[in-house]
Image (tube, rainbow, N blue to C red; front, side):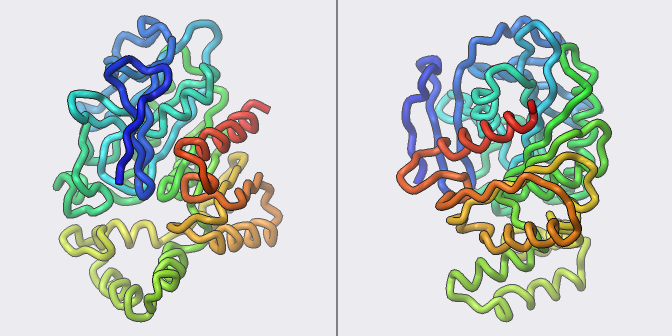
Length: 335
């Protein structure tokens, strides 16, 4: 169940919306002069972000305002599963996602960026965003690892042309499904110097899902692999579904893994995972660590004892876990 509490430092009409399963929503007002942003962007009301469109409206991304002074590097946040917008409208109020937590932690040291997924429009907020059957037809038709990563690469290209952006350093932070996407983007885009993959596991999603089903008392041989065999038989289908997503989406993501993308990446790497993560098991993080060590690939490995999928510890309220891990990542990026 969602819980709403006042957002400290926000205007009177802004609230905090949290979801333990899929989404942490945080909207906070930051004292950054909006007039400092590039005039091509449109302000997202009640937030420090500006909305930009390109390529005939097919691309939409958001970038935090420039506070003046030296140019700041881009920190791109790649969200997890779902067809909802990073900004949603609820009861006449615009609520902002995890990117606002990241912006608050950055304290103006970076230009925080987030991008709409292919087929998703500004303020989209379906009832069940993690189930593709509730998403826009455009999303169902277009979304895959390939299309999403290409969209992010293009968004970064455009964002680097905006005034006040430091083009010498770029950090990509991906959470959950976004972890593998962020790593893929680091292998496709120019100028990404650092990548942080959070709660994304390590081996193929088939491993993650097998572990998930076992913890639920289900047999993967019955619940997982028969449907996967169907995916292999029709990998391009956007009308057939397994586990809430299209065959096309699953076949694209299953072709690779966090381990495979990390071993290809030339960026500095940071991996974070909570031992109490109920969605992607800590055993997947252990596989990642062993594979990196076996190949001599250096990385920062942040194993958060008792942390959940959002890094919250027992008794903590969101976004405490993200605040802590974002602080460590940004310190690493600045070092």
